[in-house]
Image (cartoon, rainbow, N blue to C red):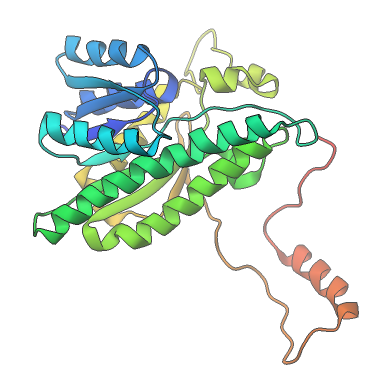
Length: 293
């Protein structure tokens, strides 16, 4: 049986551990040639594991939020394997803190690594595919970004992280429209899985625990089949979507759309606004935020 990503060249960022590691291994198992990116030596271990299992991979160490390095990472994939077919943006960090206690550094670090760390590789990969398209070469390229439930629904103590992940969802929708003309699809996942990041969040500790028996719902490898498919040629008719994934569940985020409306054929009077807003809230599908959690 043909492997779903046979001979496709895929860059996976933040692939030294956790979700990124699982994505890289799963892509390689489905025939992809993988560029394993991370800051530290763990990327080399993942690349070595892939090659030991009969796959093809190289490690490339660097900070994907650095514009010049992101360009070099794309160039490395093309130089090593002759092309680039997919980019899986996974690199991220969290610095959880209530907003009233958050430092400027904690805000800047999370926005830089998570949001700019998606934008920089995406920009340079897109430029490569645009050039190929202009030259008349066929392009069936894929970008898979990593958002989060914190970005889609909010999360107490994660204002910086949630803002970055919401930005990634918006970036996904925008890039999907801009890059469709070049043969590029852009989607995002919002995974829920056990990683070093989620294990560090006290509120998630019980949920992330490894079960004594049965299906390990929170194993990060459960998310990877969705990533593999989104990186494949088969996914060419799917773009601009955000998928949530946990255990054996895949769902599509049903947000980013207009809701109920109150209309006047004239300018509103401020005294009318309160009843109108409360009517809209009553009719909206989105539940009110939980305060004091």
